[in-house]
Length: 171
Ligand code: GTP
Ligand code: MG
Image (cartoon, rainbow, N blue to C red):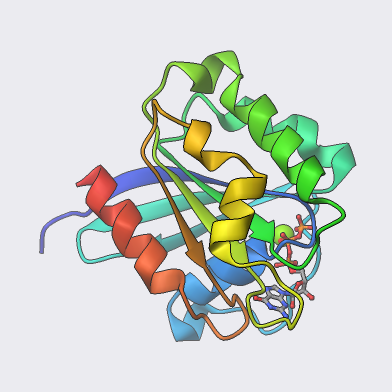
């Protein structure tokens, strides 16, 4: 068959937002891990769509590892940014990390698509994707295509919509 086009994706966001859980759910069932533990440093994962082969740099969101993110910006062709929609206290921290990312020299002038997952939508007190979008001021992102989806990383809900959008941005 045809060789799939390879795409490097950076998976970013605060610790405990659900990055690894989401990436794990995108892998084929027989390749999924049963137990997800906090990521140390980063982990390289792979998943495919019909015509693309994604290599994901699943970064740790812990404060002490966030300085690693920027080393992968140059080779990133897409970003998945995950937010814990129930973590209202740290929404401002997520916003700051997003701003730092968007202002970085290796990202600022690159028309890189950004897929946001407003994750943990299953939790009773989680914010809607519209509210998360407002709190992160996503409407201010004018020079990059972006999209936000509500998701439940545990059940896998909302993930396909997001990946379909990403696929369309890259094709
Ligand atoms: P770091 O690797 O430390 O940066 O964290 P992470 O963003 O990779 O988060 P991880 O995937 O390890 O998930 C953190 C916790 O959130 C785990 O206990 C997951 O089971 C839980 N979790 C992930 N997604 C969801 C979700 O959609 N809903 C709920 N209720 N819990 C979730
Ligand atoms: Mg992780």
